[in-house]
Amino acid sequence: MVLLNVLLLLALRACEASVYDVIMQNYAPDPKLCLGDCAPWNAVSTDPSVQAKIDAMWFDGKPPTDAGNNCAMPARTAGEFECDGCTVDIVTNSFAGPWCYCDTPAKGQNHTQYCLPSTSHPEQINLQVASEDTVVVSFVTHDEKEPSAAQPPLAMIGVEGESLVQVTGITHFYKKLSEAEGVNYFLHFIKFSSLTPSTKYQYKVKSGAPGAVWSETFSFRSLSAAQEGLPTSIGIYGDMGHSRYNAMGNLLEDCVDGRIEAIVHMGDHAYDLGNAGDRRGDAYMNSFQPTLSACPWIPIIGNHEHNDGDSYERYLNMTWGETLGEGGDGGAAVRSSATSALGDLLTKATLFGPGFHSRVPSNTSRYFSVDFGLIHLAGLDLNNLDAHQLAWLDRDLSAVNRSRTPWVIVSSHFPLHHESTARHANASAAYFIGEEAEGYATSGHEFIPARCGAQFARGEGQPCEQTVGEMFAKVGKGLEPLLKKHGVDVYDAGHNHDYNSNWPVCFSEEEGAQLCTKPDGSKQKDYVSPLGPVHICEGNGGVPGVVGKSTLTYECKSSAATPWCRAYGTGGAYGRITAYNATTLVYEHVQNNGGKVTDSFTIVQDDHGPFRY
Image (cartoon, rainbow, N blue to C red; front, side):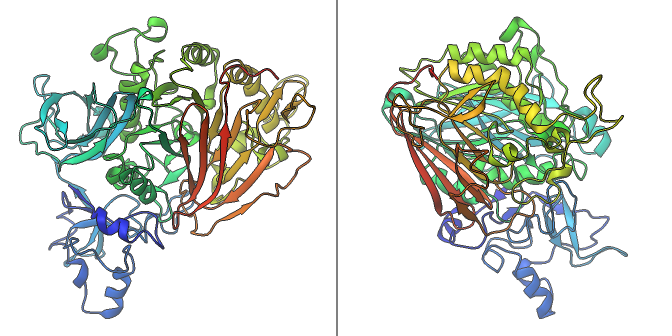
């Protein structure tokens, strides 16, 4: 059970931390390493200096009243001393999960020790958007024995205040990881379908294994429907780990208060999924559970998932062909290649959800689409933008009914148009998409010149490696015509650890990205009837090492190279997109530390459809 005093959290949002304290009663220290028990958090030591140090780790500067002696992940030291791409595991930063202060450590062991999960309690509970009236709840258990086919996972769900009904799902035993770690990983997936729009539901889940226990009861609000005439609002960002100044607390508050109804994470989850024998991914999902158990989300693949040791296999999932059947895109059976627990959990739920339920099913978690309310969202994988993905996107966007779902948003991890990548067009593309460039980029992104020589040559007449400019020109050649053809309103992305909003962009292979030209010959620097897509980068949802300070400027660094650049900001933040109706959409840039809106703009579009630049 993950305990979180939500009312206390919301009352204290002011201020200094953006993530919250997470208390986990179902974890306990390893009896081989801790010969006693966890000490009460408010009395770990008679030494005042030791107690003061422990107190300072918590959100409110002291342990919550319900902390007791339970294993926990305190807010203020979450991700402490980390950086993007480096590993700093010091226990008190909760790198590998919840921990406690052991009152009697074994010889040679420290008082601060990681805790281990129980075998039967559900954890990492999260809701993924599948379609307008369907979400998939996924969760993990560590049961001692594999449930049989006759023992599916169970959920009880119902409208708040009414009786709960039982539904069943499917279970996947992650054999490879279980054998490697000596701890069973069972991944469970249950569909909640035919939900009434904008309705509050309650639910609880458990494994189907003998001795399994129910989770606590959670609540969530189902998505709005376009025909309701209500606004559609989402929180959106890329690049977030379990760090002090991440967006988790703000997103929870926004969802509870009704400012958003879903969350879009545009790639780079956890930093990194498979670290600490997958326990880094477990820690991330357990810390995110209070938010994602209450607010459905849509995870998109990023370069950390692609680069994390085994290229795609850590994140990708094309499984359940034998369970869900063939069909969808091309009629091909789906396959599985994920090899980390978090990668498998995210991708199977994504596949089980939008990968199968979108109007044009993709049968893959690499790319997919969802409709909710007034918004159609297509998530792409620019790590490998192949012809098959482009063909699917063309069919998907062609199937959108703009009279019912007027606003079309396309998202990927990498931004197509960003002021810093435009200024570094001659930089190394391999370095840009790798993890080394992000090693200490707690804001922005690092670049190096494209490298030349035998080891970097691409063939005759190409003595140097691919540049950033060449990479995005290749991507743009296939993708930009589709954005124009289908009148994509917003393209939102992450990767660069900062904020960049642009004026409407008109793109051609000959001239690249340019300000759009109005019929009177003037350049468009407004959002009234945009003549091209509006490109946004919201790329620092809370990367490891991000600080609590932020900046914002409307003076882009190179106006000559990037005339379309409108604003640039640093620091941990996320976006809020609200489509109020068919003609008005508002974007807000929200700082993680304190929740202040530091930038916003309104797009007014009376004629959704193909652009004609």
